[in-house]
View (cartoon, rainbow, N blue to C red):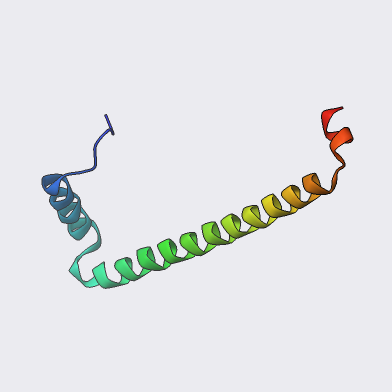
Length: 73
């Protein structure tokens, strides 16, 4: 059902519905709000990715510090 991205006809239909619901005057305001939400989402996921990478490095360093004989037990 949702296996492919929307085509041009679907995007035009969505745009027409948005114009009917919100009106032409509110489209810039709505676009700005959507852009701000996307930007905040990207910043949040970027911070999570950075934190996960740092934790992975800490784990690797801790694993390297363990003597070989303890690793096999």
